[in-house]
Amino acid sequence: MTNKKALYQSILKSILEDKKLLAVLIDPDKMAIELTSGFIKKVNGSLATHIFVGGSTVDDFATEKLISEIKKHTTLPIILFPGDVSQITDQADALLFLSLISGRNPEYLIGKQVKSVSKLRQLQLEVIPTGYLLIENGKVTSVQKVTATKPMSKINVQEIVDTAKAGELLGMKLIYLEAGSGAMDPIPSDIITKVKKELSIPLIIGGGIRTKKQLEEAYLSGADLVVIGTAFEDDETFFEELKM
Image 1: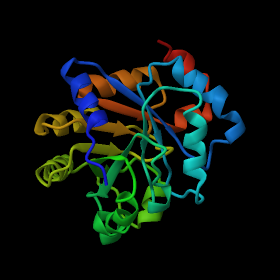
Image 2: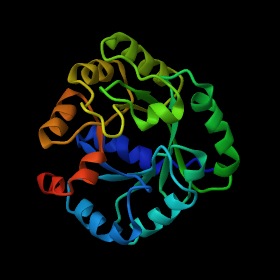
Image 3: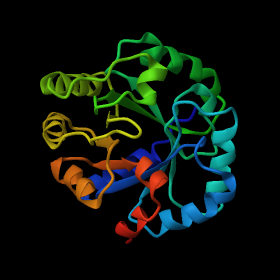
Image 4: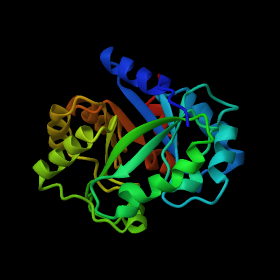
């Protein structure tokens, strides 16, 4: 298992320089290999700084195959956002080592992580410990179904803040607030602001962002890195709004 920290350090450097980061999330189950080059060309022409790859349920070897194809068409860093151990591959540059700290299912708090170690030990892959919080958004998401955990209520903001801070105190290097794939609404601005105020580590926001205005609101509220996935899956013309 490697102790490389190059990508995480570059994220910290960008934040110190007040650069806002944008990751395009690609689900291997929803991206046909033959369409990858055209999609990545649009990513390259956008404000995107990172590519996240992963999904709640992905066929074996689909992630590795997709990342190998993506790497042919971009120099952007590729970070794994895995829903399961089977999605881990050293074709990527780094791995978000997720712990679903908003839930109480031990399998997703520590179980999957333990199962991944024998695989990670053999790979040259930067591992970034990440506290992952699922926030309610108005619909049941695939993450909720797969992990059998309930999202946190948007009403109890203090519990969200305290959970995120607990993740940092446990040693997490990133905190990721997630509304879920296909979320009806993004994470509310007040939640982002209050969580960011408590943290001394980078804050990632994902789910429900479908407009440039919503993206800018997330940044203004305190997001260091925003993740957009479904918006591009549903409408690739959204890239036009996010051109460099």
